[in-house]
Amino acid sequence: MSQSLTTRRQARIVALQALFQLINAPDYLTPDLAIRYALEVGKDPDEGYEDVEDLYLYQLVEGVVAHLEEIDTIISKHLTNWSIERLQRIDLSILRLAIYEMLYLDDETVPKTVAVDEATILARSFSDDKSRKFVSGILLKILNESEE
Image 1 (spheres, rainbow, N blue to C red):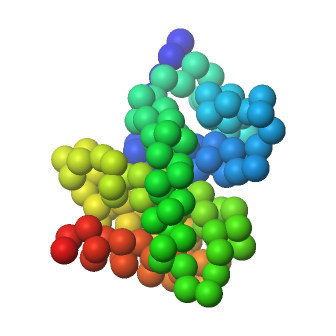
Image 2: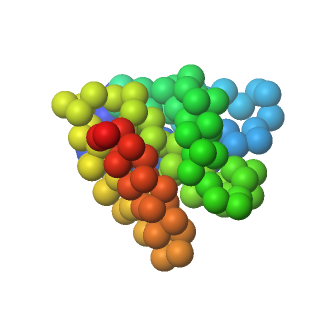
C-alpha cells in the first residue's frame, strides 16, 4: 500500500536526510536510492514508511540535485572568508533545500518566508544554535535580494 508523508515538514526532513547522504556520495547512490535509505532510517515500526509516494519529497530532492551548481554558486556568493567545502554537511543540506524552495518553487507552492522559517526549524532540530543563526542569516540575505 502506498502512502504519503502527512506534512510538508515530514517531506522536508526526509529530503534533508537524502540530500545529506548525497554530499560526496559514491556514484551508485542516486537521489531515488538516497530517498529510500532516508525513508528506511526514519521507519516507524507501527506505521512504516514503505511504499511512500510523496511527490513533494521527490520534487525537493530531484530539484536540488538538478539545480545543485546554481544553488551552490548562490551559497558561495554569501559566504564571507569561508568556502562551501568548509560548511557542515547538515548546514549545507539545509541551505540547498531552502534555496531550492525559495528560488525554484512559486510562492503559491511555498512562500519564500515559509522556506526560511522551515529551514530555521530544521537547523534547530538537526544542528546547533550557532548553525541555526548562520543558516537563517544566509537565507535572509538571499530573501532580501530576491525581493529587490
